[in-house]
Amino acid sequence: MELSQLRDFYYDKLFNECLPFWLRHAVDKEFGGFVTALDRDGTMVDSDKNVWQQGRFTWLLAELFNDPRLSDHPQRELWLETAIHGADFIQKFCFDESDGRMWFHLDRSGRPIRKRRYAFSESFAAIAFGELALASEDLSYKSLATRCFEQFLGHNRLPQGVQPKFTDLRPTLSLGCPMISIVTAQQLRHSIGLENAESVIDESIATIEKLFLKPDIECVMETVGTDGAIIDHFDGRTLNPGHAIEAAWFIMLEARHRSDSRMMSLGCKMLDWMFKRGWDQTHGGILYFVDVYGRPVQEYWHDMKFWWPHNEAIIASLLAFSVTRNDRYMTMHRQIHDWAFQHFADQEHGEWFGYLHRDGTVSSSLKGNMWKGPFHYPRMLLTCWRILSDILDC
Image (cartoon, rainbow, N blue to C red; front, side, top):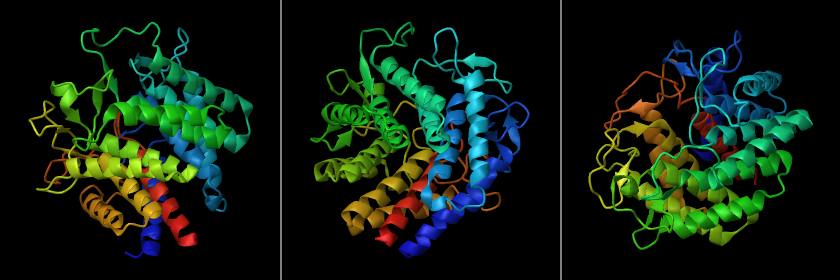
């Protein structure tokens, strides 16, 4: 496809297939919030609610409402109305009044089932409230966005009253915390003018570069020791290429924002290394886990193909092309785009399947569950449409 055709392709998939699927099937008009455990045709498989997905879908809808390119879209008011519907549920049911932290897993009516030791529920709620603050100019949303982000940062730096999962025998650091700090701060800088956004982003990128990048073996680690050392055990050797590629495009996005060539080079390098490590030379697509030294991986789903790493690689490769104009990134983009849409896309009901076997055949007919919802795939479609629109408008 030409760039204009590719731009139109992403727009069509987002607004004529993906978004209608979730608006039709996920909005819980009886109890509030969103149900995301859906079969391929949108049939509810499980009525429980994941708090991540409440924040993520609320964010997506408010983000769409705030996009000036979409100011004339006929469903714009529906997006805002549905985002407020999600935010109301979050405020009413998703916070534990005893400690102020957020739940992870609720029943359909909003009664809590589980809380996780990490604070990613707070990060997704923060970006949702931030976009609603921008959309509505309601200062209470800005306050909630700031509060949730501060809770996320504080929990990751110095957890209080949280029973640790591991002993202190082998302390580790995870890539997830700095990478989510980057993108959350970027979102809040735009939506509510977060004052410390750039200091959070600088600190997080420095942490990734200092501790997780291993130039000697051309790798981005998923888990390291507190000094950045590679831990020669299953957990320490296991790489998640999709996660590292997602972090790469967050860094590229910041580089573009600042016109910072060194930062852009860092993001591109991370993409190059981890695409090479993750791409399945036998069947195509991105493997979920690989070992840093090529040894066997402990997790039995290591060679499956999950939807979201492919979403992140599609974004990262297109963003790299848009800034560098290096044709090899467009070649990479089309390689991953073609494989992913050939295997994940449901031609009958729209949207994507979430889980494939290594050979690309469908493992499960689920369109959503506790982990998959209206986020990675629609975010990819929206981001790629924006990137291509920017290129073509120049």
